[in-house]
Image (cartoon, rainbow, N blue to C red):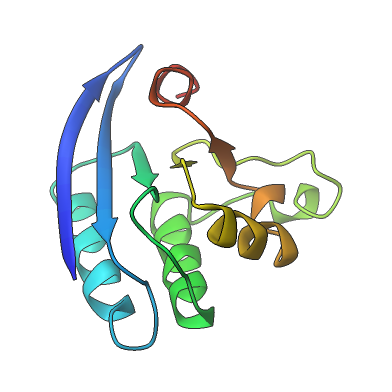
Length: 125
């Protein structure tokens, strides 16, 4: 799995992580490890660009959840079900239609904001 990183500047510096290809049982460990590397380097705000991800499996969703936990270990989960909690340090960008459907079916959109374009995603941090 190829993964690229770049920086975008809004009110804060945002690291954009862009994976290429499916995030599934064969690739999720690479996806998760690369995210961990960048977070360990001091990154506080991460935008994951899913435009080049045709499919995300349950393993990919678990990796996404782990990344969220690393960024916000004390998240206010009580508000997740009611829609009052949103991640402060993780956003998703331009998921493909299939991935967006999976994110919505599994409830990830309830606590991780999803944006259709870069400018508004960066401004949301």
